[in-house]
Length: 108
Image 1: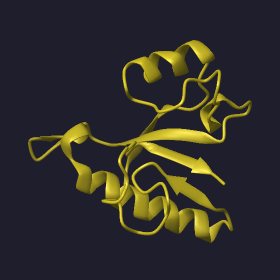
Image 2: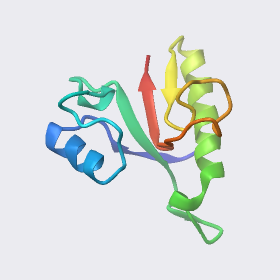
Image 3: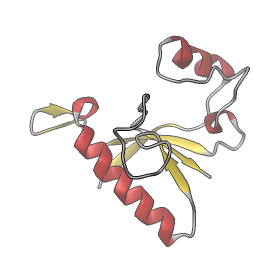
């Protein structure tokens, strides 16, 4: 599956912007995330192309789920543990989270 890395390391200013816009639950000051580390331990990935069969990628939850499955498989092959922002607790049920960040993947 083709995808683009749309964000890796985040400055504190960028983290606060995303927090203010409701796109992150951490502000970068009181609580820092894995995007804020140097080097970053998180990336945001976007399935490519931006529109597929007339559906914009941001509205295509299924493509993010497929990408997540591929990322979990690749991480397992490399002996790494990851967390996906579509299933924060990693239980395989992405309906039990109140906040979804579908592009987000982080190393554990």
